[in-house]
Amino acid sequence: MGRLEDLRIRQLDEALTPFQALRERPPPGQGWARTVREALGMSLRQLAERTGLSKTAVHSAESNESKGTIRLDSLRKLAEAMDCDLVYAMVPRDSLSNILERQAEHLAASLVARVSESMELEAQGVPMSERRRQTSEITADILRDRGRNFWDVR
Image (tube, rainbow, N blue to C red; front, side):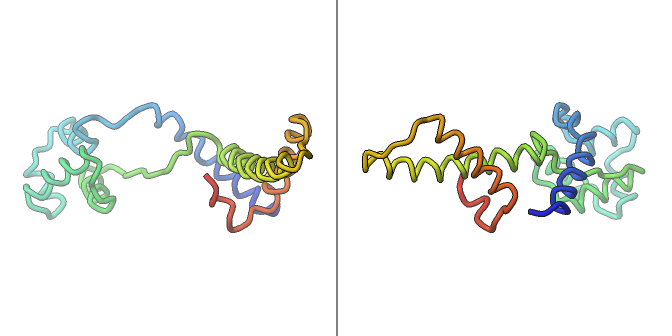
């Protein structure tokens, strides 16, 4: 890919860096909505009135959040009713750049292995050091020109 794509990846990596610490902090077992509601001293009925939902709907939403099945729009509505913002992000386990590099290395190793197997069958095998060098070169090419099939190989 081009420089603009590389810039976009670096900028997104930087934007997501502050969220890394949140990966280490799981949500409360009963969910954020109930935890915040109770901390505010707000009853189910009061939150229901503030959201325009029934008490049963609010209870169901809190239960769904604790199970991980709540819809984002429902959670956002509860948050707004408690004067909170819902902050939503996908936080990569590693930098996006590193994820891309690992995938490119995986693709390159797969390509080199296929060719090497074929050559070994014809008694024309290459030394491991050469396979590593080829893998490194192909990895750089794949990273530069990520095509449509970049994510096809696991």
